[in-house]
Image 1: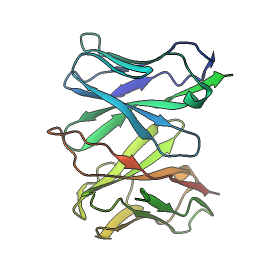
Image 2: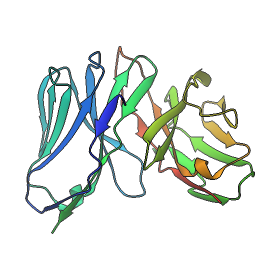
Image 3: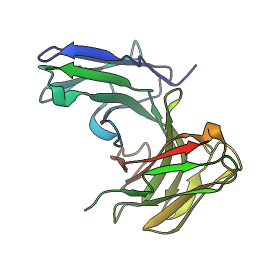
Length: 110
Length: 117
């Protein structure tokens, strides 16, 4: 079983839709939960991260963690064509590694 | 700052050839990471350095892979001999700090797209 599982999509939504991106993980010791965004032909960039359970909001983006279910989500409100990218969840495990999901490719159609 | 710089951006080579990928981290960052990204396996950490010293190379797939960091501003990832299954995008990233005690942002370069024929 992989440490982090993520539905690869692809996911296509119309502009203005609410997008929900999700990951599950297996290691209950994970404390930090990160979302990276990767545009085509670019490297990933950190979008936001949360510590432990709960929600964190940043503009149109909300990260949600449910540690009891080992489930994390990223919500995008009022999605824009510029949000079209691959979104990767990631979790630091131990002192040496950052476990990434395989990424979900999102396309927002104007 | 120019960010993390990688070269070349694209590399096409034939099986058995030696491939060298290069990375210049962001000035002042103490940590440097090499990742490989494929459709099937996603992003995988290959090796990381702290203050130019390799700390964990457990992600390096085989002895054909080697990485060096001769100084704070330069690192190489070498594959010798290369094989078709090495085809992937290789990313270099750097950060100020790392470890469970404090999560810090990793800044990724644009990647090198390697194709081994």
